[in-house]
Length: 179
Image (cartoon, rainbow, N blue to C red; front, side, top):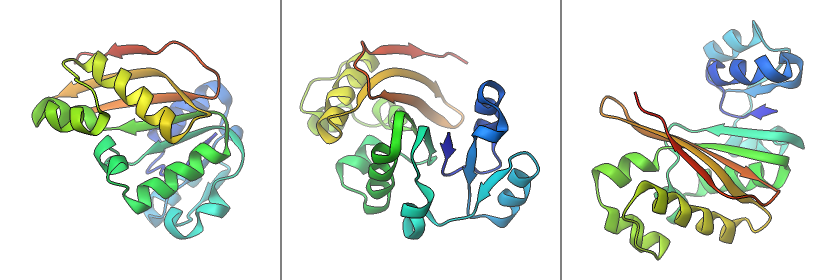
């Protein structure tokens, strides 16, 4: 498992509970974060994903990306850095990619019409939003299927969703988590 933007490793520690720290590769550029990561994980790097992504993204079963700012709008608008990192993740993950995406905040707060235009479909609900998003991502990465979404909306810090992509086809499961 690779967490390319690990921060202090909160999510990586959660994954490690199931797969063991020896099976988790973590990366962050902040020296303070790297020092914290090194206290728990044996495989820590401090590579710049924008400059050294080819070195960082190696074949693993799962790649997890938590940008804090990943949105469908940035993908749609072809944000160079984000799209390059996404392509590396989808090209090197053997089984799964998880994106932590904050599009739900914009969907609920700003304009559903904006996302409808991007996705080419009416999206009157969160379920319709994620179903349309599944088709959009499948168009970008035909070998991948959005199979599960867990999302939460908070008034304090917006909202986020974990988007689970699999190389295996499967029915999309969508779950909202309430505070």
